[in-house]
Amino acid sequence: MKVKVLKVLMLSVGAILLAASCSATTKNNGENKKEKIENMKTDGKKLVVFFSHTGENYNVGYIEKGNTHVIADMIAEATGADTFEIKPVKEYPKVYDECIEVAKREKQADARPAIKDDIAIEDYDVILLGYPNWWGEVPMCVYTFIEGHDWTGKTVIPFITHEGSGMGGTDRKIASACKGAEVAVGKGLAMQGKVAQENREQARKSVENWLNNLKISK
Image 1 (cartoon, rainbow, N blue to C red):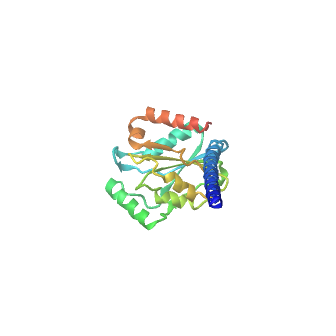
Image 2: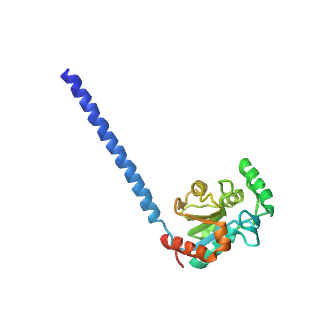
Image 3: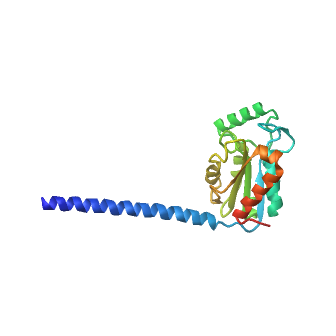
């Protein structure tokens, strides 16, 4: 009977120690991840890459300059970064309903639309990557651009425009696509398109605060 009780006690102690070990490991992994993000390289040569839609957009009407383009220019001005706009060979429809239907079909097909021109991201250290949140996904033409480059050793910082869906986990998808890069998951900027278009001062302050928190400057 004593032997049986002793075995039960030993198993209980073992379980407690294992749980404590797992808890410590989880905590350490969380701390290491946080430290990794905070120590992410943000200096060096910078590039703002973005895709933006013009024409009719939800909540802002017809626009000549896309929401994401507005924010991309603010980021470039604040950081002194070069810029590159991703442009599909076949433009998306200007009419909003038609555009989102095309985007939906591309997402379902996991398409890779051809894009015009290119830029050597290999010449840069920090790439700030912008796009609208379409159907909770990165626009497929952005993947076309990503998959045409080697991202090893780069720092990639996402920024998006949206009308209520926020980042929507797209930063994690960027992290999976930009193989070999250090991607600022959880540290990207999500800006409402209506703010970008109709309250530029507020948008600029948000951009500047975000960049300051990331310790990115000219």
